[in-house]
Image (cartoon, rainbow, N blue to C red; front, top):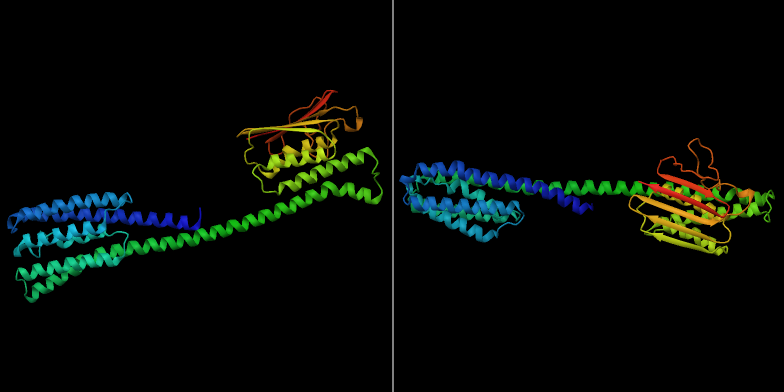
Length: 391
């Protein structure tokens, strides 16, 4: 996952938790604290119906806003805010002077939390503006009811401070925590990406070193013998070894190519080399190979590459692929040549369970990982070499 996506996911998870908290506080406060107080003092309100209808309207608006907020589809902020401020003014007017500074006048402590739901995800300035408008409405109500004594003014100031600080603290805290979570997640994701790139570079370097060692071993021995005069270039066996080494070199070089189907690419490289040496070859592919590790591809291709280097007359290479199995088969004419009795031994001949080479009757045997099998058969007319990988 890209660092930006990971950071966004962490920030969204943190923000969602804060949203759940805000919705629960708003609705619980409105139902568990405001409603009982309003019902207990309903006979003392100047207009009880206005206070209770206002409570119901705010409750319905809060439920809808909370559900939409938790579904990441919040209601339009300012129409909701305008509705809440309208109810705020109506309830202050309907509460009367006797309930002006009591819990029955529920707009004091409740509306601040619904303001939080209305402007969630926006800047804190919007919440402060709504709380400022709420304080202005309350001040007008205080003056209208004649509560101008120093004690009433102090009480008003305490109510404004006490009912505004908690919503602001939750709003700012949630925003800050989400931002910090985003930053920490982005930093961690970038660090993991850098580690992964470093590990990938080290793996590529190690694979290049191993491939270089294989390439050197494939041709080094025969070239050294030719250079020392210990091998005769006209000798058929030396020529056959040179062709095998060239075929393996070609396949190992093809391993490093960035292609959609590496196995088919490596087999085509071996077939192309055989054609360049004058061998007519048919390559038939059925299906698309699944992603295979380099070692598995080598074990699938090496025995056929070695056999193909010895082929004369013609050859038919068939690759059948499925999601859980890949079968590679090579058919060539058999030759009465005692030097080539049995499978080629220098490029991955199959072995029996006891570790010895298979005879002319062939036989399945697993490689070290138990994933690739090799079958070699000859009947005097054809030679059949097959490798099979099973998941």
